[in-house]
Image 1 (cartoon, rainbow, N blue to C red):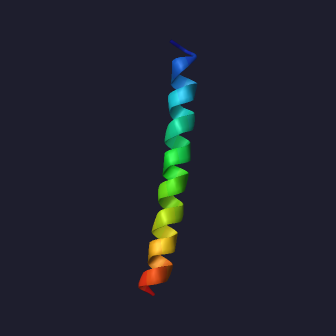
Image 2 (image 1 turned 180 degrees about the vertical axis):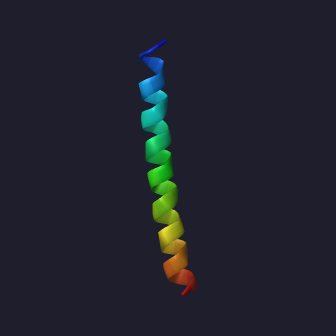
Length: 31
């Protein structure tokens, strides 16, 4: 089970990174 946690964390990190990038792009367009 210890091996499953890191995988989920990695996926969450990638998703957060993508969301952050999208938010930045939206902010630029809004400006």
